[in-house]
Length: 307
Image (cartoon, rainbow, N blue to C red; front, top):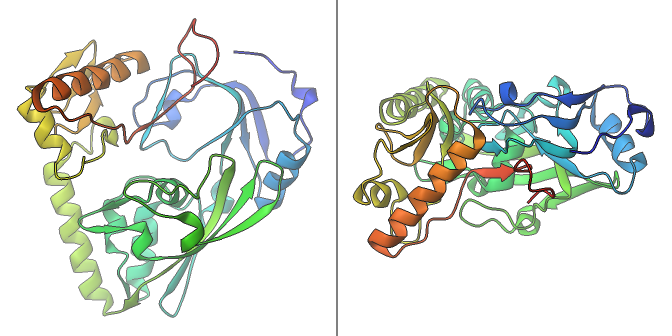
């Protein structure tokens, strides 16, 4: 990666770290460093930095890394990781306003406490609101588009952008309107009124089902591949004989075959190679091409430019 001098960057009120390790910030516990890691103090700090940064400086944003694979060569440019200032949650009537760094599970719990139903599924979605918006996250038959009202983002020039549901153009596991040059800072969701106890009971059931069926206590990146139309990814993977398949310390989960897990010191290359091997085997067996759901970012050592 390049090494840009710190004094070439605009002043900030948050923190800037050069060559910051990222592997401990992502769920896979694998991958290389950020050339520059920026943790803005608040939305104004983020906007000012983006407006004043060098024009050739690439920007990438990460949340808690629950559905992210950082390649072993790391991420050139600046990696933005939102601070706790972006994690506030407030309720009003049947609406929930949440910062982009708020954990999805925390949003679900806040909604339940306020007697707002319809957000229970977020208890089973790993990661933060920002990532959930980018990929129209969902589970158990519900997804972000079902509760979305509006979102606020900042573009790479420091401009504040408001997005409606139409702007987001939600599709299955993606939001084409949420382009890579937008960093979400806040979203508003809407549900319906119900008794808090009933909402919590439904959430606990979802949580129990998730723990029973997914390797959530392992070093994983969540669902690896999107479900192809008319198919379940895990079933295609299982039928292709991939359950328990390994490359190095990377393994296809025995518990849920649409999860890759790091059983020890797997590299990002191991994990990505295993995913590609699964895709090849599924294609050979069923003719279906699996599409990655996990976002892969950064560079492979020796290959230069990031993909």
